Image (cartoon, rainbow, N blue to C red; front, side):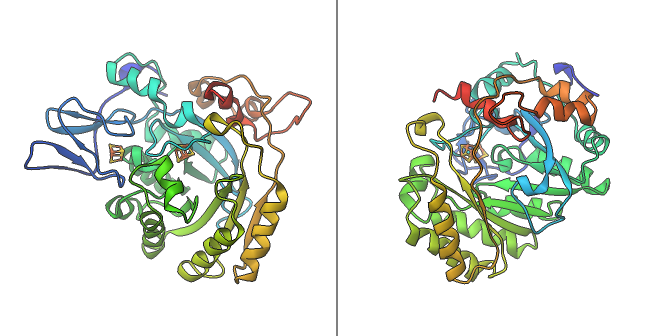
Length: 355
Ligand code: SF4
Ligand code: SF4
């Protein structure tokens, strides 16, 4: 398995076009950044070198986890199976409550890659699939940041996964272009997308160009392309917890994805710029669930877990790819008395999130 940074290579951005004004436009996500030589896109992942755009993070895995597909959350596709989740660096949003800063925005990691100073593990698509099979996973999920930003790797890894008989999951904020969706549709089985709010102001705060219409349009397009779609709303106290608006999200799902389409309501835990807010009161989540059922949504799932901030250690991603499945679970397991459970892997990143 490749480990040395020497294996690392720049890969041309999958969707780019040269414009008459001398810039090159990236068409992976709806930022559609226009870049001159030397410039990097909003996500910091794509760079223009002499008119051609390159992805800096191809094959660089920022996080890995093995767990139930229900944790994505996805409940109506291959329930009871296990999925290997991977992330890479770069996101097209800047959510104030992001729990994944180091592994999603990955600004330092991307700077190191741009300077040729990275020592991150380089994992080829074939190695990723081999690791998934060795750990007994039934599928691979691309998650932890917006996968459109590292679409080149997603396309190659998803195709290799399909060839090996694994299913593929794409966890998204859906601020992505139709062109990107058309590229992933042949190799992605499931889209799990956020609907963060129906208020443009909410989206504007985390991404200057994002609007509700654009996000919902992408979700609908994914469904039209035949991808199995499930949606999620993370309810943040005082930010998107208005019950009427939450009922409207449910009504939108009913009307555009169907009354049987699953909606996952997850709990916010304080982090980063929203560290001053309390965790979501479970009552609001259950009230949203009731409201959704009243408007006719048939499958609403509430995740009022207690969360855990006690994990403090991380192991290099490269270590995990060499371990067997039992050790992978040990790495995940939280040893603190407060939970003693699995599923705390990502919480450790809060420590470095400045919250
Ligand atoms: S992926 Fe999105 S944010 Fe990144 S360079 Fe392309 S258009 Fe810009
Ligand atoms: S879309 Fe997700 S990964 Fe990206 S900034 Fe927002 S919460 Fe973080």
